[in-house]
Every structure is written in C-alpha cells, then in structure tokens.
Amino acid sequence: MLVTTKEMLLKAQKGNYAVGAFNVENMEMVMAVIAAAEELNAPVIMQTTPSTVKYAGLDYYLANVATAAKNAKVPVAMHLDHGSSFSLAMQALRQGYTSIMIDGSHSVFEENIAITKSVVDACKPSNIPVEAELGKVGGKEDDLDGGDGGYTDPKEALEFVQKTGVNSLAVAIGTAHGVYKGEPKLDLDRLVEISKVVDVPLVLHGASGLSEEAVKESIKRGICKVNFATELRIAYTDGVKELLEEKPETIDPKKYGVVGIEKVKELVKNRMMMCGCQNQA
Ligand code: 13P
Ligand code: ZN
Ligand code: NA
Image (cartoon, protein in one colour):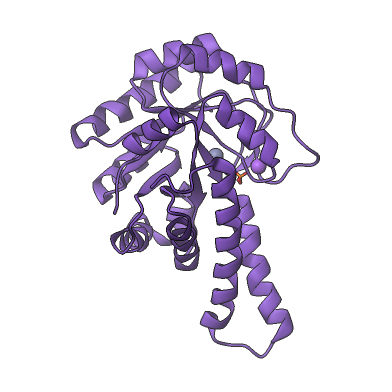
C-alpha cells in the first residue's frame, strides 16, 4: 500500500531502526526495490530527484511506484528528494507524492526557514509530511555541486524545526553524495547533540559508500531515514554491462534489465538489513 512517511518514520524512531530510502530512475529499479522490501517484509521509501523527474516526469515515476505499492503487502512511500523549488514541491503534492523534501540548504538560514515553512503550510491540509535540510551535505548531489559541507548546528536545528513545523530533518554530519575517496569521518557527537534538542526524525543523506558501522552508529543516535542513490546506479549499470559484455548480440532490453534488477535487489536487501528495517512492515 502507498502511505506517507509520517507514521513510517515515527515508528522507526520508536523502534530504533531506520527506513531505507532508495532513489529510483527507471521501472526496473522500482521493481528491484519493491522485490527487496517484500522479501524482507520491510517498509520502504522510493524517491526521485529533480533531475530524475525532468527525465521522465513525476507522473511516470509515481505510476510505477503506485503500481508496485498496490500489489505489495509492505508500506511504500513516494518521496520527492531534494525538492528544489516551491513550485516543484507543489507539483509533486498535486500529483500524489506521499512525502516531500524541500531543500533550502543552499540558502541562508532565514530563507531556508521561509521556503520550508511555505511548503509545510501548503502540504498540511493534505497531511503530506515534509523533510527539510539544514547544513550542507557535501559532494555532487543531483545536478548541483554541494561543495564542502557546513555541518548542522544543533541550536539552529532546534530553531529551524520550531519555526517551520517540518516533519523530518536532514542533517549534515560529514556525509557526502556519491562515492567517497576513503572512509569519511562522521561527527557522531554532533548528531547526539542534534537528537537531544530536535524531536522529529532525522535523515542521513549520502549513504552510498558508508560502512555498515557508520550507518548503524548513526541510527543509534537518532537517524530514522537513510538515503541511498549512487550505489543503486552502479549496481544496475554493472548488471547491464555484465550481460552485454557476455552476450554483445543482445537486443532485448528485458534480457539485460533482469540482470540489473537482480543486482539492485541484492544491494537494497543488504542496505535494508544495515538499517534494521527488516520485518518492520
Ligand atoms: P548517495 O548517492 O551517496 O547514496 O546519496 C543519496 C542521497 O542522499 C539522495 O538524496
Ligand atoms: Zn541527498
Ligand atoms: Na555517499
């Protein structure tokens, strides 16, 4: 069933696990993620960035995910990841996305509060939860270069959540989008400080390339949603390449699609176990 992320994340917060959020870019990735969730009896979030919805459209992705959700026993949410404007957030809301991120982290504090609050207010009548970001997650995110991370300040986080009424908050504690050169050092003490003052579920971006330990230690300290994107791209593409290298005469997209699906499914199952969300559906 298609649900919002609101209850899903509050349940994770109570249960000390995190829900995996997976960026999907085509029908095959949706099929792989739902198969993993069903096999593990795990709640799941699928999400699309602005550059992804530019490729095919919000309606195309929502139709794929809603179809997967309709036939599934596990709860599924469809989330706009790194929503880049009020207008795109409203398009996703009208389209039927069940969770929306507005990412004002590239603006100054007061402007981030203003745009986040405007999206929260607009989503409230439909009961659609909103995620925001405070501080800067590094690396290349979507089409934007996040640059070097400015870590989330706990005091600002409290003020931000109080003033915006946001449902969940993405924090910058040393993770970055994309793969890492070497193991990143996460500021887990900062995460503890943020958790002490902020009561909404916290979100970890940039999880591709993190160690199992880093993910688990973050969850212990209040992370309730973990975002994985780059690793899914790599897994899918590896699968397709493998088949085409072995059988270059292949012209049936289903033949290499199925290998990509299998690779993504195995990866997603592994990441769900890291998050501890198996059997939490
Ligand atoms: P990665 O690409 O590092 O997994 O980051 C995912 C993410 O934060 C999506 O919003
Ligand atoms: Zn992100
Ligand atoms: Na990453």
